[in-house]
Figure 1 (cartoon, one colour):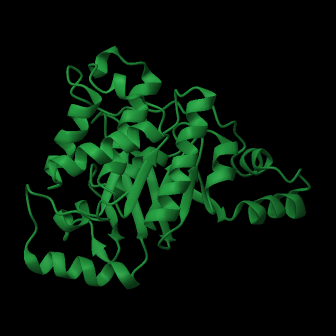
Figure 2 (cartoon, helix red, strand yellow):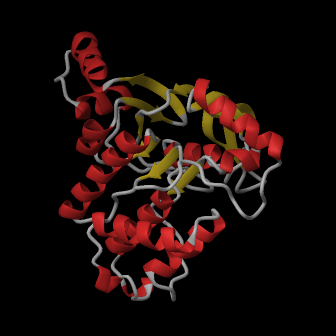
Length: 295
């Protein structure tokens, strides 16, 4: 693909000095730095706040695929929303390529994109119309955007004859593919994927996984992936952070985590054993809590 890694926004354009800072810091800083981040929700003023993220710190290097694993309610999606700026921090700080997500908000937004399991669209518009609208916000040339959108959608298994149909007429799995294509169209330097293959059939899931690998390798993109699929995490992620109750309980490569539970706990060297041993829960367990689901 030929689109730039971090195309400029035409709306809410950051100041020139912020853009210069971004280009200078991207080279040397970690892709993502999270330091002592805490987030609480107060859904009911009569009750104490719910602690969704509890003093989390982590560092992601550029060009890696980093996985967040945890059962429902562990804080995975809340952490993604904090990094993407959709939620405000209560405590701590987050930097994206050396840029503070609060102080340098507009510059950071030029470098990231996010795909969530509940992606929103203009449902009456077609996949192509949705992608071209997103491309305009990033200042992409219309002809280039159309060509790239067609290529990305085709790579994800969406045929040309489907590109003009309204999104609302597409299956849940096909809509998720369009959401992924929309995020990839702008070639973000940091791509946040919040359960991107949920709802996809096995073939589509493999297509998306292969494309994630391709984007990581060909664009030097750093990718953060949350998933309930342990096989997917093992295939894609170079390092994994395991969350439980809003806290980091373990971090390492898959072989490191497997070896740790085998040596310390006498468990089989599988990622499932890692998860069950360190959290005491199933990946599909739900957490009953007051207020927002902080999955």
